[in-house]
Length: 321
Image (cartoon, rainbow, N blue to C red; front, side, top):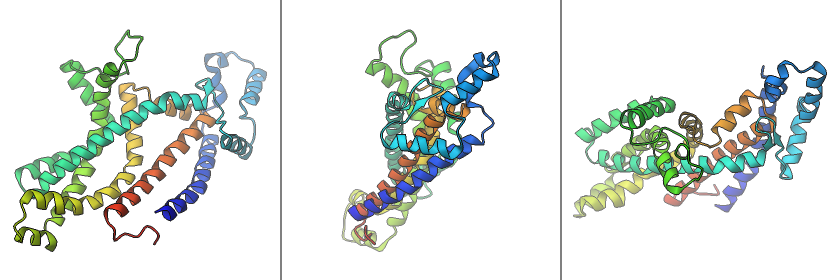
């Protein structure tokens, strides 16, 4: 296990280097001008000399390779630079917003895994039954539904029509204090929408895996020995059927990040979504590179977690092979 984790860590270094350079290269080809974005409306009346000086101050007058290398060497010492669009250090931008994004993602992921697993096991007990047909049809429908569309639908139904849940933000309007109760109420809809957008894949994987496991000879033998159906289902079918789902956890991380950005935007959740969008449209090199590295590291960590969970659940899998 330690050897595999070490190899993955060494592999992550070159991947992150390539990703950061790609961010700077794509940003350099972008039609957006970071100087005009930073100057805002003042840039409309500013002289060309003033804009040129601002370009020098922001460091965007340097060649692509020089800008990337300067950011990289500073980042290795802990200095991620200053966000031009947010007007504050990049580390502060991430520190203020990352916790809220993590809270949303963890709650949504836990909801999707637990509910998807439970429904998958129940549907696998009687393939082709009413529950299986109903939930499978709903899962295929949700699989094709965009997260932002689900978010808008949830706002219309729960906030506008029923008025039982807030439509967005982190606290109630006019409140100057962030309380746990307010955060919990405002978290329900975005976490529910993000979790539902991820649920179909977990349900379908668990449903198929458990259904296949229940047809295997060891399970039939357990039933022939007189073991109860519940023990057979949970002790044999679920354990074997969960193995394919474990590999899904890591592969869903990119979709979870993308879905979180859309859901945060719909519900005005104070995570990193707004920062990511503003960094991209304003060509904010330091912030855009840091957020991209963060997302890439999350994907790599998710893939490693999937392999570790699969290896722990199935001893036949060798970590060091």
